[in-house]
Every structure is written in C-alpha cells, then in structure tokens.
Length: 96
Image 1 (cartoon, rainbow, N blue to C red):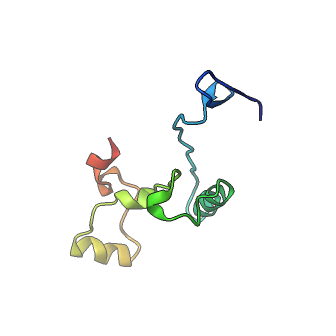
Image 2 (tube, rainbow, N blue to C red):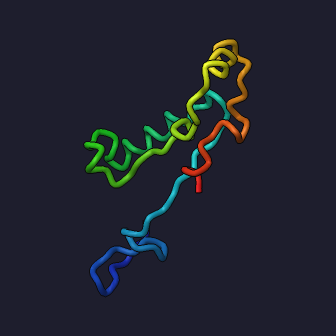
C-alpha cells in the first residue's frame, strides 16, 4: 500500500490520512456469510479481541435496528409469517 507522511506526521494512504473515518458495507442474502466476513475484517485489523470501549472499528448489524415485536407479531414470526424485510419493521429514528 503506497503512503506518504504529511507535514503533521500522519500517514496518508491513497489521498486519505490514517485518521479519516470510513465505512465498509457488507451486504448479502440470508445466511450468505455477512457476519463471517465482518468477523474476519475485525480479526485482520486486530479489533475482534479488543475490549468494546477500546475498539476503533465496530460492526453495526441491521438486526440492532428492528423495533420490538408486539405479542401478535411474535406469533407471526414464530410461524415464519412475519415480514422482517418490510421497512416498517425498523426503528427509523436510528437510521438517520
């Protein structure tokens, strides 16, 4: 990876300094290995075994943004008849 050191002593990789935040999106179908890919990324950057408060890299799962199901919705989900892909299943305030 090509880099240079700027006047502040910070490494710059391909035009971005080492302290610039960035996002890696991992998408795919159900059981396609998204969590495994995220785990491998965390392992490669040395963050997987770090204490949560010490991490500089985190994984944010879409599962964290589902609203709590009502008793009726839980019954549907148990029967496989609840549509978790519908936009109404997410807590929208956290997505903006």
